[in-house]
Image 1 (cartoon, rainbow, N blue to C red):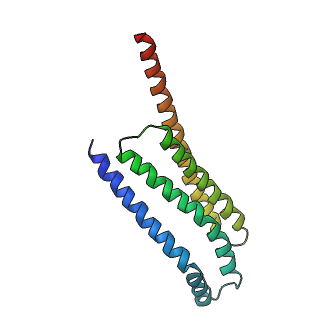
Image 2: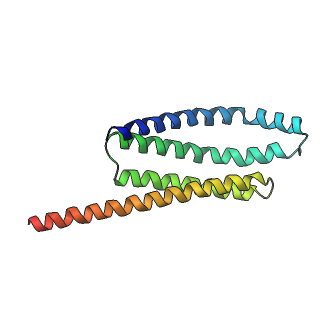
Image 3: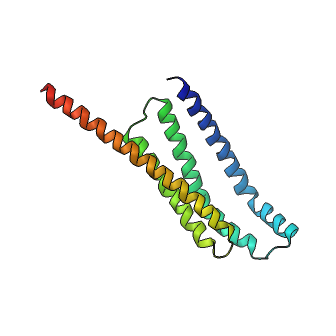
Length: 153
């Protein structure tokens, strides 16, 4: 049973690394995009399009990372099936779908955003399915516990 704690801790460290990368990219994005467009000789409106798409996604990405951190900490604390974890997965799912909507709308201006939208939708769908399955397991466990209590009366 200790093996899962190693995986959870490794996942937690990855969440911290991705959080640091998110902060770094958020700060450096205008410089990186401007440099890229100057080097490639791209469209002059591309930096504005990318920044107007990426910056609204940053709060949702941060919310995902915070939710995953809380979820992993909860699992390390021993709570795997619980309403708290289901709510964290719901927040993560909604954030993924919000990023999907933002990047899907921006895909009309810059086609690679369609790939990001598809990726975010796939992540959101994955979190939705995991949340649904855990919700089913939690409800079955509650029904079983309730039946045991009723038998004991």
